[in-house]
Image (cartoon, rainbow, N blue to C red):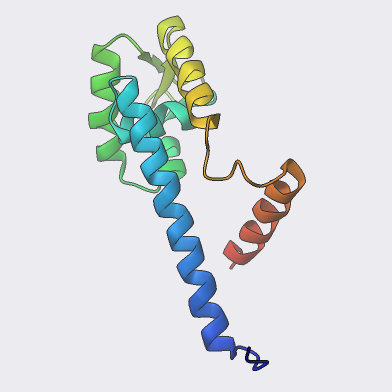
Length: 141
């Protein structure tokens, strides 16, 4: 067994590979769980992120995509009765997306499914907290 230490470049490459692999596992998990509910991954993402009334722009920021993409996803969910557009209380030009009771129930089912066999399940809660803290620190610019 070699006792050589990794160079910073090797360590960065290995860590980036692990983060990418974990992201791919999380994405595959989301796709499988949303499909079980008859949703696309994008619809599942929107439901997961809609923790309270949000504008399309706010939701797009949370989901790291363009507001026009959110409009298309929200239209489908609205057609299915899972969310509604309400006037923003402080900005008459904006609309907020709000879950309907049917949408709230679907979101709860989705969150339950996502917690089952999660790629992060092998980590204890305190390890998940530590990972979250470290990743947040790495993302600060």
